[in-house]
Length: 115
Image (cartoon, rainbow, N blue to C red; front, side):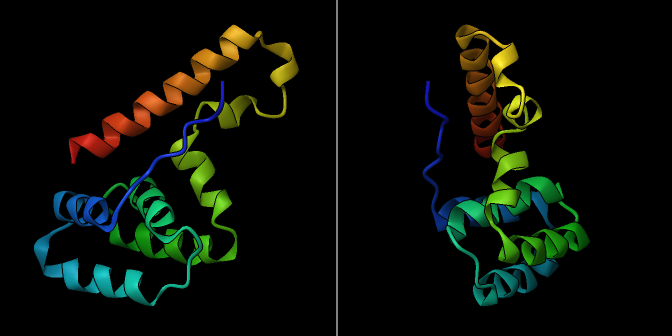
């Protein structure tokens, strides 16, 4: 089973920001996003938002960190369970790995759709 790769939009980012952060800092957040040179921008910014859990200071740090290597941001946000076994996959059956991949997908979509 292949890893789930979310397809996201700027509207998803807006929805999460509006759900997780007070209105008085929305402009600051959107400006931070606008000026950040991040690869896979929508996907990576959503990963930053997920990892920051509504904390503006954490969000700023996550965005700054993701500019270096955006994949290091995606891994814990989108694949938290797989990331714990990724260097030991030989110890798991294909079925177990598929279940972990599905668990990651379900937790991500649950988080994204709650906003």
